[in-house]
Length: 452
Image (cartoon, rainbow, N blue to C red; front, side, top):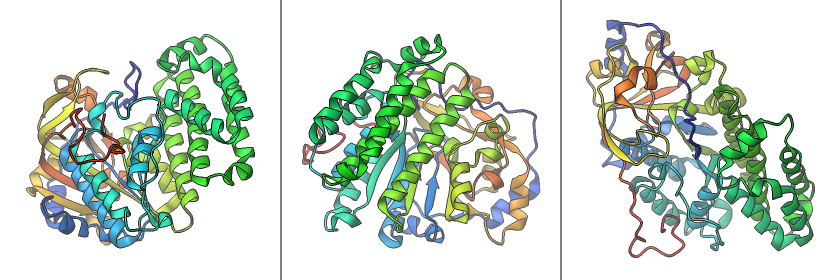
């Protein structure tokens, strides 16, 4: 997702045409496990106890606007937190917005913010009833726990240049005013672009070297070099400031290279999100365990898809390399229903009808299996099924934009599902998320992160 006029979804290009083998349909029918309804979240979540030994469980979604995906991830995450000691929830959202939720769920004192939260396009991706319900639950779950045992909530993404600059300066104003003055000088050239960083990318692209690049790197180094001194004030505040400084550095680089090509900017973004996840695990200690919520295109192993074949990598691939079997990659998908999406970047929210899946897609194979709601796990003792799922077929990806009129070229790519994921959560029919209105929820404290 992004705030620029460019679509930063991966450039999927399906090639060829494949028939669905009848043996694959039979194997799915026999080996997929029917799931309880989402109205029974505890029973639903219990099916995912098998992944409890992982250090990182990555939960995907085939769209950025489907209610069942959010509610399923909430039920699974609740189970992993309550019964299996998971301590971090990390999502495909901006770090400052995630920090507001983190302040709320961990009962931290509210802090001043430069801008309202979750207001950049696409607002419905995190400002929706499904996310709000999970955040309320996490707030109450954490309340009786000591601070060190409370589950944290974080954004992994890269787009918060304005808010992150403000956060670094606000932190240094409190702990080191002299360093704050130096940081203002270093960030001065970026400040003029912070509300529209894509324009900075164009300007910097006409130069062979960016003075801002050296400045933001130097600022991050200063924060890290002074770590021991700053940690004496507040370790959590220092960590937050350091992450914001990393975002400023990554965002400067991202917007500077975004016009060179999709692969370079995509890889930089996912490398940053993976690095943020690793930093969170290190910060929370050896016992830390994380659940990640992101699109299938970030969560699945890119090396097994058109993305990887064209030179892109993602969080899922990096987690598999770093954590091996302690990283679980779960894909989510659907055949038909409705979805919250836009027709163009920065466009208005629309509730769109999702077309039934193409007959040469993995989704259609699940439709033919005839089970409306399933978990299909091919990790252990499922060699026959894994073999069938290794052959490349088309797979659908809907981001914040859905263009059904050009669905084949816009939303389908090829993958080897058995290598892309460890398991697959299937909902034959789904509906759109419910966006939150602008009114402050009745009975919710002013620290509530979605109250605009």
